[in-house]
Image 1 (cartoon, rainbow, N blue to C red):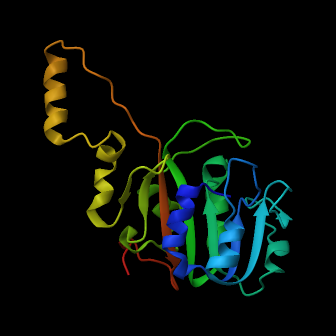
Image 2 (cartoon, rainbow, N blue to C red):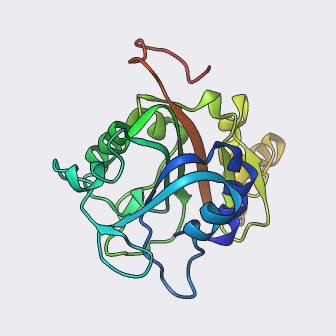
Amino acid sequence: MTSPNVERWLLKNREFITGTVLDVGSRHYDGRSASVRRLVDKRTAATSYLGIDLFAGEGVDIAVDLTGDDLDEIRTRAPDGFRTIVCLSVLEHVPQVWKMCDNLSELLVPGGAIFLSVPFVFRIHDYPTDCWRFTPQAIGVLFPMIDFCNFKYSEALTADGSTNMRLFGSNVSKLNRFVTGGMSRTMKQQRKREKYDGVVVTGYQMRPTMLNFLGFKRATEPEQGQEQTL
């Protein structure tokens, strides 16, 4: 499940939602989430849909632990793998996040698309636990078989959806400025000078920010040091 703000990002890139779709963390929490299934069924070229979650509930076709070694129940639904994987606001809740990311990469077919939404700056929210916050570099490490095309289709998005920034190319280095409300280099230098002079300055205000990533599975293992480009 996801928020309406992230759903708009999915719709913007719906041309890549095709074939067999795996929705990870599909359980519906009434009043707190929007339906990926509804979006996939009505607005994309998907041919089938499987919703999975750690717990059974509305929107869940299979309750399964994706940090385990037995993925047979999932594979029986898509023996050739999934063309699209959607995993939104899930990874931060997974203690064994490396194992889950490996399993997601394994279930995705070469050339297939994976949609990820993760918190960069966000409050603690236990469902049932909250373990991680992510940078673009962390996502690259967790998904070495996924090419994020130099983050061409990825973005930073404030939690209320009021502001977003494409992560394409050098924009990744501007994330700090984005979450502090666009504080310029000049403003930062002035702030430091005032602190040295004993002036009480206003503390940094970091906006709650999600990072949305769209990447595609490589056909072969990347070479050491290979950049995230096509």
